[in-house]
View: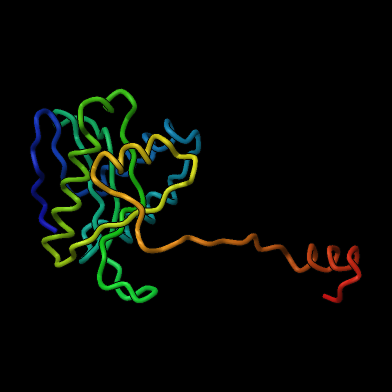
Length: 169
């Protein structure tokens, strides 16, 4: 991915730099109320400036990070051909009505297309109405896969549970 950014109004979308991680961490903390500096440093090591991985930031007037988006190209999971995935995104609440999210989405999908994919996916919590509305406004819709999950209990919990039901563990 090139170092150059895409300038759109007073916001520039560009590849993240190590110096941006403190601002990304602070933005995430303001939105989620959780400080995760080690997580964001690891994300930059894994996704910043790597082939087929994209960690972009939106910078307002060359001064402050007002958003970030992270994605990658994944191939052949569950039979899917190479596909772009967006798995992290945030916009400073004070900048949300300035199309920052749309600009980052356009930038990352352009990078994905330049690298040979023609589909982008993401996964959201069922009750995440803010991001659901955003991604739908970008043209995304339900795809061909269904996400499944189950809780994993510790073996101690399973033994205790099976004693109460008469089942052997």
